[in-house]
Image (cartoon, rainbow, N blue to C red; front, side):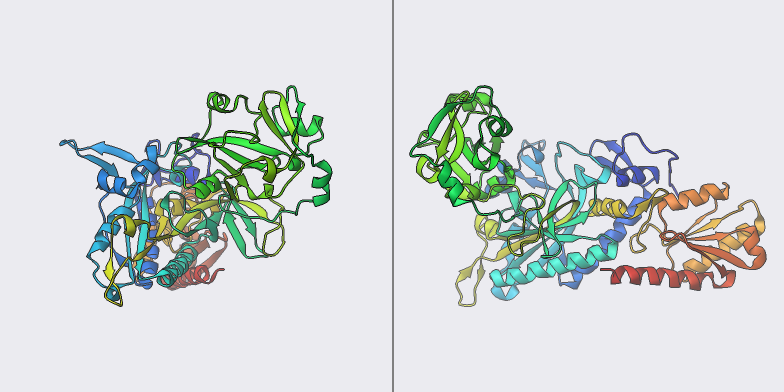
Length: 575
């Protein structure tokens, strides 16, 4: 079998999963974000798919397979051709027809649902395993962030919101079972719907220091949320302190050289929690002022969710100066033109005695009353929740942990059935629009996530459920005919017993074979050697615990089958 293991760590690999997948001969890079899966990886991928498929079938879902190449028009109709921007691969065929390479399939599946006729056909749960393509600007970490990957995506169609709730919960339960079976300690967390649209979503996060997502977490309260959606409680403002700093009208004062919140706090008796920070964004082509308390950070996804903006970017210094007449560091929302949109974070509501920029370089205003002096057009939760802040429902301090997103489920609502005008005949004979949900798991990313939490200094430690093989027979002295024959008999006995097994009969030293077996991560190793053969025994080694026991040669199949069954049961029972 082609297993090109490497003795040294590849220089280009940082994350453990990337490094070990390369070293253990699972993957090879073709170009940035595109990997060939070698035989061992193909076996793992198929086993991951089998687990997920089993759980999808268990909730009554039906398997489809939809085209990767799709017409541009359906993406334009949904509005996502513009929303997805440069991450959507675009091409033309020889006739000049404009096409996209699907990074997701909401448009296609919704069109297929047009053949549903009656509410009696609902609910429907449809899923597929299909290649997705995303023009990822920064592919990295091996299979963790790629431009070509396999996604299990499923879609639900229900008569009403109560039905969607049931489909959503069925998927949530199926996902948790699947993650448990493949060895991922996934945490469901609240998340933003982002470009998918809809009313709510849950991400599944695998805690890992190599993860790119910040998760705001309170185990005592049973709360977890992606930083993009997390909320926390703030201590109420002190009315007496506000009153003491209040003025009848904002007062200008010179602040030469002040460029930051810290500069103003240090030199002018204006702590961050008494400042109004003014950020300038361009939302769908329109300059917009975004206001937060000086000591708070903007969570940009919350701004996107609050405004529904498709195109979002910080304004350039030249754009800001042309509109406000000042540079960053002296910006504010007092007295700005009435047609300039202003959105403010809820922490500023009702505040007075505040300090902000005067829209004149090196000048600020003190004594600002937000309600009196600033024409806020929209209030929203915009700030990033911070570690240590209390959770709103129970008051316990929030923690921040790193994690890998391994799945995401959405309540899409009517976004796509509205766009494509999908209806069925309702209970009263009138047309009713089905309500949708969508649900995704990245297969190769799940493989990488398993390695991130199941490895040691020797290599990968695959859970038995998705290991490329459950066991490996290592022939310690291949040049000894008796040992080689005993190894072959053991291998055949394991095959006959239904064990997914491979034999290492290379003419290499036993130490090399042991190292490769540990690197590759096969759960159980059966070693056949001269000494054991003389005693009528073989060594059975558990990769996860490194424990070795001697078993009779004639009972190898029985002992390995029991070990595999026990390991699988322990994985399913794990919490």
